[in-house]
Image (cartoon, rainbow, N blue to C red):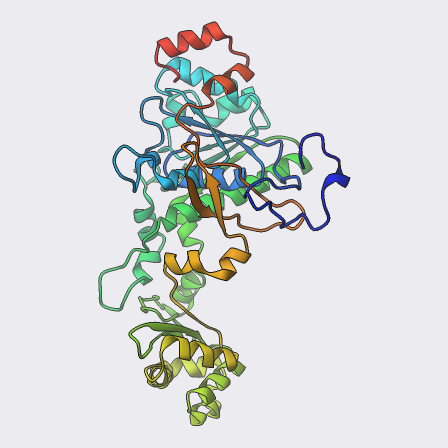
Length: 423
């Protein structure tokens, strides 16, 4: 809701209604009034802060004065700001503080007095060296919630090792099962370990905020390890090993223990993804591909029997898909009410009508006057939807504004600038 607007000012159905110039949400955002200090860099911590910021939290991002967050220069031509930066840092205020200097550490302690959440993804022990550990900050502000994202967590024998998403994906079990049987493990071409950790961090922060309101008013630490966030996605792998000594192995584009669900070759050199693993869906699929014998085989009526005959079933489906182009196969599968789809490139996504109508592709105006297409908001809340107003801030753009609001005088700010503590 706009400042000063009454509930009656919000039009009916405003939940998903955005103005066509992108940004201004007419309904109040659910985290409005929550202040976050983001002290992370690159992906995991900043992704968590970005998600909370999308839903109304005020995010004050602390960056090194000379270089800023390294993400500013990732995947971009030399001398230009990364477009990824404008996705990851929307809604944020940039405050350039040198945390290696005692005066910079004191500034963060001052900012923490009025913060609800502090997010960091340094190696464990770093904040303690700076006098910014949770025990210290919670004495200043007992309501403070601290989200700590690290490779291996804040405890355990590996806590002091440097942790990156690629290593966490391997330790969490994902790398072993990703790829083709007998070949080197394959990495998803995105930072999935970092992103999963960010989302687990968001869940933890929201639960801690609720606990603070409902059960006592104090803050706490949310400890997220990259490898544990990946491991949490491993479904029943631990229990399967414990009960049956089963080690889940790479399965290419299939899903182990579920049949049929795979990528099948089409006549024009593309692939169609088919999920025919529901019992009634399987029967319709077999009828479509001309295999009534498999459709009516009682041994294949449920998933356990189909898993035992997965190769036979996949061969039958592939024999049919090879006779059709991707579009022909998709049309026939849709008519038969069998879940299917194509492999989307980013070009397909940007041009897709469903993405567009769901407001998942939005255009923002940058300070240089250019426009940039960016992803929309997930999830969609009907009454209090998220939103964003611009791309990422310039380095130190909000330093003076934020520190003035914290009570620093112009003379003090000038002195700190002269020492290189702020920029």
